[in-house]
Length: 418
Image (tube, rainbow, N blue to C red):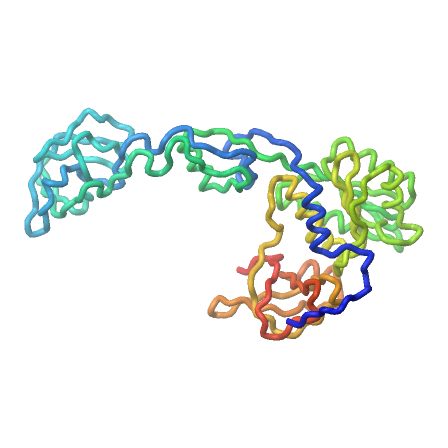
């Protein structure tokens, strides 16, 4: 991995990618808390510690179908030397606990049944032989505690099941339900407004004229947001100040965050930043040393984040995935990057755009017979084809001029491998 140490002037008036990422993290905040039933909270982020209300199980229970015994009675039991015990009754899950196990006797128990008083262990059913309705031959020993789940063995009352900021996965929710919890506080997901800007942009499904194009960026962003359970509304503004201002002000009341697509670059026709300046937003950065995706601006307007994204599909996608989407997820209390990463062996040398920039390249991940990942660049002249078909993103970070074939590199996964 080749490093550059000399100062480069290119893009010095832009912020670096990592700096932009941190500025977003520092300036977005969660958008409130809501209480949800357990079944509707899967995948959400806990807004408070989830604490067990009761212990589970509430009493000692058996882990196996079998016979509850006094351990000393069966200490020398074996197939060759079975021990004969008297059966004094049966207990099932949720059943009675008034039957006592005395020396020389046993109580038949089913998995999940409370351990009868006096019993110290359970011998599995397959290691026993009932010779009559009231006698059984036990053919194995059972030390104290064998096949017994003690009270609170799964979770104790007052213990933390999920800490604040943790993701609510099905297993944790099941544990919480067993511990007496039926509703949880989670961070609310933000409502997102997406505005496509441009005279040439047409909503999907509408009639199109020569030279116009469908707003594929809006659909792509909406789909990404929906994949994380985040609702969005979208609209299109003509490329003039009045239309842009109208759409921005229309959405600011109901949306928690606004995304614009197009109209964010430096020509006289790219008006979004100017309109926001007039509306009094607090611009935090404008342009990032990120390729593709440099034409992104970010700021706060009326207390709400606004991301101004470039209109080119490749630049729009990268600015959205690498900066806007992580910021929106943080508004849900979620600090993860939206894309998981794997380590892969690079199949070819890769040059970066410029050592002062961070560059992401479309890539193809594969896995060999040993399960090791390999990566190569996705080479297709169509940017939309690359967005649709590449299954990974390879990063050449700032300060690095190139990556060498054979290196182990981190690759973001767009499409999980089968």
